Image (cartoon, rainbow, N blue to C red; front, side, top):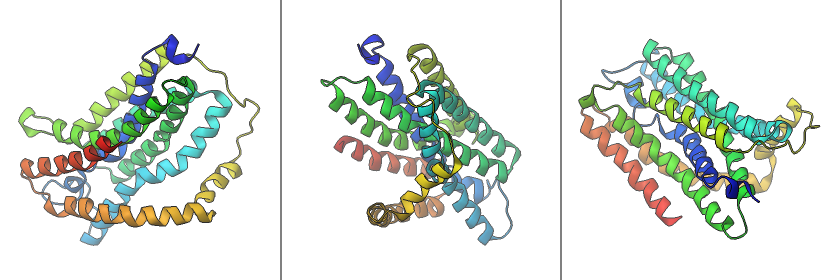
Length: 279
C-alpha cells in the first residue's frame, strides 16, 4: 500500500510544498522597485549605481541559494529521511520569510539578502517533495502526479507576485512586509500538515558520510559537464530575453500608483498562467 493510499491528501500537501518553495522567487518581484527606488525606498545604499547593484543582488540571492541548497538537502534526505528534512526546510522557510519581513521593517539590506539566500537554500526541498510524490504514486496515477508537479512549479512562480499584489493593497491598510508574514503563515501550516499526515520514512543511506567536497562536486558538475552547459546557455539566452521584458519593465514602469503595480502583477499571471495551461 502506498503512502498516498493511506493518506489520500499527502500528494496534494506535497504539491503545496512545491508551490510554496517556488513561490519564494516571485514573491519579491512586485515590491523590489519600491525597496530600492523612488519615494518609498527602504534600502538606501548610496549612489544610483549602488542601488542598481543592490537591486540585482537582492534578486539573485534566492536562485543562488537554490543552486547551493538543492545538492545539500538531497544528500541530507538520503541520510536522515525525507520527512525530517522536509519539516526542517519548511520551518526554516517560514523563518526566512519572517526575517525578510523584519529586515524591511528595520531597513537592513544585509539581513534582507541573507534571508533571501536562506529562503533559496531551504527552497531546494521542493526536489525532495517531487521525489516523494513519485514514490507515493501508483502506476495508474504516476503520469497524472508528474503533471501536477510541473504545474505546481509554474503555479508557485505565478502565485508569488499575485499574493504580493493583494497583500500590499493600501486599501486594506496592509504594509509592504505583509506578503512575507502571509508566506510565513502558509509555510508553517504546510509544515504542520507534513508533520501529521506524512508517514515517517526510513533513511535510504543512513551510512552516507556528508562531505563538503561531494556537495561542491555536485555543484561544479553543473558548470563543467558540456551537455549541461550547452542546455544552460540556451536556457539562459531565452530566460534573459524574458527577464529583459519583465524585470526591466518592473524597474521603470513602477510608480506610486497602485494600479500600475497591479497591471504588472497581472502580467506575471498571464505569462505563467499560459504556461500552466500548456502543461
